[in-house]
Image (cartoon, rainbow, N blue to C red):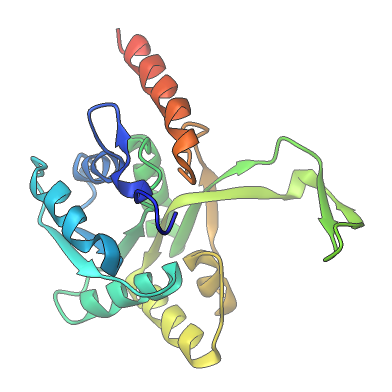
Length: 219
C-alpha cells in the first residue's frame, strides 16, 4: 500500500489497525515487552498512534528495513543489544483481531518445541502452476497449511536463523522458513479464521463485521 494510507494506520472501528494488534499483545500475560518495527515513511504517525495507547507493558518503536525480513532482522539485533529474551513472539501488525488464546497457544508450543507458528487447513483445492499460469500438478490439500502470525521462537534459534539468512542471501516469506533452513522443527498450532491480514482498505468492512459478531457473542 505504498503511496496510500498505511494499512497499519487505517481506522478499524474506533482506533488505528496497529492499536488493536498492540493492545492484544499488551493483554497477553505471557508477553513481557513490545517492540514495534516501522518503516521510515510511517515512523512519526505510528509513534503518535502508539503514544496514545494505555499499555501496561514497556513499548518501543524502532526503524525497520526495506523488507519484512530485514525489519525482523533489525528487531532481533536490537533485542540482542539489551536484555536478551529466551523467547520472541512475532506478529504482523496488520492482523488486528488476534486473540489472547492464539497468542498463548503459539507461545506454549514454542516453549515446548523451540519454534511455532499459527496455521489453518486449506479449504480449497491447491495446484502448483508455472509462470504462464498453467497447472503443473495438483497438491494434496490435507498436508498443506495456510500460515499466519503469531510465530514464536527461542531467541537463540531466531538470531542464528537471521544471521545465516543474511550470510546466504536468502529471501523468505516468513521467519519460520528461516528457522526451517537451519533444519530445526517448527510446530504448527491451530490458527483463527478471524485472524485476517489486511492487504487493502476493502478488508476493513470484513473485520468490522467480525468485531460486531464478537461483541454480540460477548453479550
